[in-house]
Image (cartoon, rainbow over all chains, first blue to last red; front, side, top):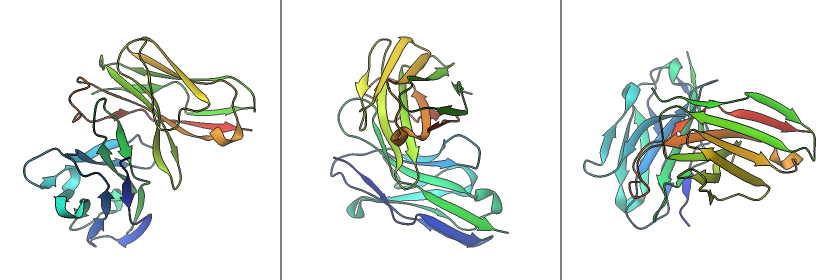
Length: 114
Length: 116
């Protein structure tokens, strides 16, 4: 069965620091990859997604992610974080086969200190 | 914007009670999902539905059932609530057919259920 691993469960950064959150998935075939974000008190929302083409994907609020097929990775990056980026971030992958089953990682809580 | 509305933000129930969690979406989406979110475990799929009266088990369906009598409404039912079902429950919806797996999920705000 497919799975998603997020390496960092809790990250604390100062404003303007660079961010990289790791995500690895376990499935050998074609996958679709997502990063979702949950700001405090808000619902989960899509940050960015990769389906095909350019492996470097740009999302909202200056976030980007790079799909490296050989490493089964889809790491999230941002050059300079802001206090408003404090949130929980979830990596997710579409399961193979029929239906739209999405498997999520356990999430990474990011705390940005002003 | 798509709106996914969950009827309760917080709910407290007693062990053994029958619990109904309601979810309504306003964008005519075919697919609807119920997840539970637990610290350290991420989101886990309980059930999903791709059409009225159709349902499929997710990864952790035990102790739960669902109902989809109308396209816009997807209910999660805990037949006999237990303390290990204390969790945040998230409803989500998406459009497009089953063959296109690329559409994003739209989430509700969640229901924090406590079973005492």
